[in-house]
Length: 168
Image 1 (cartoon, rainbow, N blue to C red):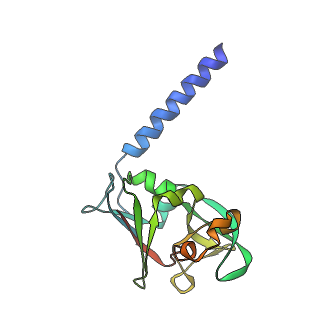
Image 2 (image 1 turned 90 degrees about the vertical axis):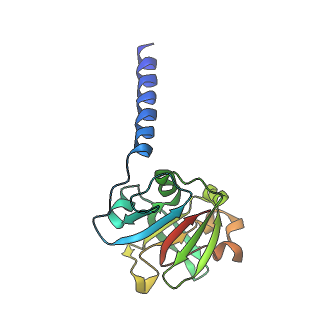
């Protein structure tokens, strides 16, 4: 009985801490801003926007997967921040994301795509992404894990040089 009470207490504490994390004010970036998020969001640290430097993004957690892309026949290791973690941190409330790149490329990403666990890649094969090689942020999908992702409509959602997200 005692272990069960301990487990329940732990679960409650984790739930409370999870709620407080989402309610914590979003700090101001200390380094260069690499991502600006606007639209239907609950947490901001600027005039109606959430500004992130790389340190703030990486504090949201890291994950990785190996997959091919339309640009590579060989699987590559993509490492980065779970897109879901970013959206949860800012309290995103929309049905889609408008992802914009430094070169003004725009892709609309439905929130349903979160079921595939896309990431904001910051590294490929251990190399930090720079603007010159599709960075510093590149929305990537685990293409090899889901046959449906091996389609041009999903390939168009791999936004490299990502710098803005607008929650619609």
